Image (cartoon, rainbow, N blue to C red; front, top):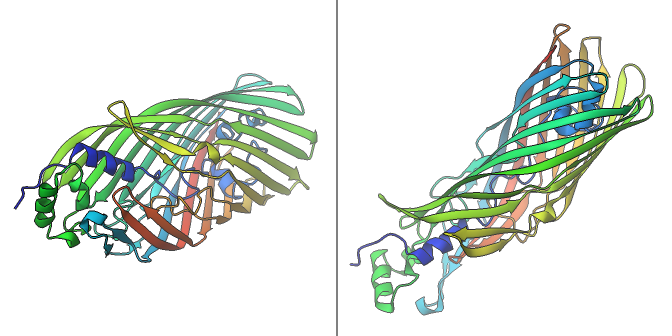
Length: 451
């Protein structure tokens, strides 16, 4: 019987290709809208126009001129995701040299692969004088975490997906006139991704002679053992990197009761560097460097806030996401291009409507709804990103505890459309599945202090 050895370099690169075919996270693809707790209470409607609190640093820096006192806010959103992924005949076709038979891929269904995720957000605004404001923000606009059981049927498509970003915003704003303000700044962003997946035993045939191949097949229990969870290997990528982008914003009051906000947030091209490792049983070896390049979307937002009377304020928001930036993932190892994986995301949009209601001098109530179209196409949807169109329902409130201290709270439920998945990896495994019962529950809270 042939002794098993660490995966060949060719096989390792094929496994790397299969592993990073799709980015991690799936709610809103991998963009996280939950950056303003007060905005979340109205499903983010009007967030580019209200300039309600320090979170306007991220949603529209020009809105800082609406704040008359310096302030600091800190909070976060707990995202609880749920879904079920059902096997719809996942299989693999063996090479012609091995008979060309179709082998069924079996395993557990992918119930609730998504771990709860905490998305922090901290902002500060300094009132320099009547016309000038400076601000900073620390938040996480991209990422989420998902993990499937090791023996699940879609293990050759994905197993663990973790994408984390830390974004530091440094912004300024200037009140050009009582009706018009401008703002903008830079975003310094760190991204880290950890991806794992199963590699079928058939990958071990790469680079072997005919005699060696037959010995290898015998070592895994015959042809039937080439796609079997008992003979799988584990493959992992861990990489990180820094990149810089920019943002611009303006607010305009055509009349005293109406504020319009327009924003632009630039694409950011990330090149994360690290390495990939292969493990079969207790044997672990470093297989080489990994360099992955991806580009986040440009985002254009248009919001409006109309104060109907002293108690009611109606809100609207439209966002355009230039997701076609994310057309491919460039993958390199040791400076050499391994492959270019097409993603072909389509440009998308979201539309939100909501309101603020001033219950008393100390309490503001909110509610809203949003439609958010997915950028993921049927052709490239994977178990890492089983994303569908989403509908939001949100409620929230702000309470002034004292003249200096306020609390913001919000809850949102997101309904995600059922979707189909049909992906074939570089090792020949075809994952066919249906995602159902997709949802996201968001619980958010922030504390604000005015100086």
